[in-house]
Length: 470
Figure 1: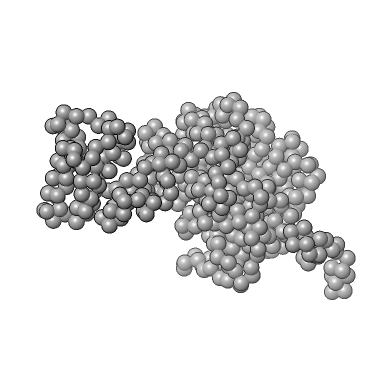
Figure 2: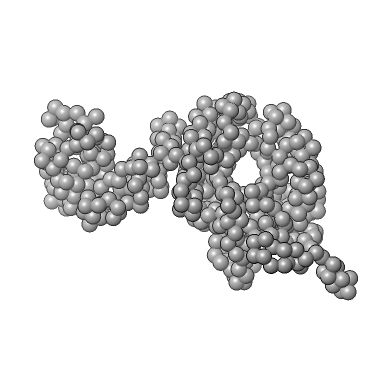
């Protein structure tokens, strides 16, 4: 006890430049090489719904000056769907470059290296010569996988370093010490070749943060200092257990994890990245929380496509960034709509119609009273100028309360008619469509008219009238 107290007395007192207070580090973070796995059965009773306990330990907001987005569309995004073709990958990569803008807001994109198709896509994307997104790879903590990274000449690679006892003991059949030594040896191999490393701490929201994660990251930061090559930490909420509630207990607390990695393990903001899953509908809010508490990077996939319930949607974080920072920092949000159209028309992926920003119905109002307000001033029921930012003008769904003006508005916006070709409520086409709509409701209908029904009626009436809308 005297030795411990003496050691504590000899630890350096340092000034914290953020709050201008002298501080002393109270703890040494040493690996807790337990004999049996700690699976936090009190929080994760498998035969019950997981628990969210609180201890009311609060950590401060600590958002980095610069925050950005990274992409896993071609890695995690391909683990839940048919593989993209090489041509599709390159086309999507082009879109990501345009969306991220000149300031590289989509900083990096990661790729598999295992198949020839994947490697061909990597080569073709690298040939584009874009500064952003940087082409990076992902491998298992395997020396065999590392050979692929060397062959291709990657500047950075992600390495899977599972960090919960569920994975260390039950999947890898290792002890914590064995796992750490194995991971560190592969990281060292990468650094010896001058390759930057991104450590994917899989299942961090079920991991022993101070018994394994922090001591491991302390060792990683020592390697970064030794080689003077970045070692990044990706905190992976693999099962979506993370919560953003103030005062929640780690390992479920997102802000608690980020605080531990930055403050206790010494990982710089720019080396921290959050990777979320949506199993409990928290992927977006957890990603935003990670930004607010110290992560510079948030990892995403287009439209949230990923394992099980999916990843954090890239397009969601574009608008989260704008709300937090007050501008888009050069991002071209109209590309989001182009990407959605490309996925549906060229790839054959059906985007759920109520998906924010990209779904067919995301800015369509259906309630009659809402439609009335929207026709008077679209700001009343539209989240922002969706025509300006997404090339998606707000739509009024047609119902028994739409009237001639509502039907005219639907036709003009759905068919994107130029102003000189707009139809108005005096148009014979509009009057004929209203006759059909009125007939539906007189027959007892109570639901809104679908787009498909309107298109069918409009096609019939335009043919009868001998006119063309497009």
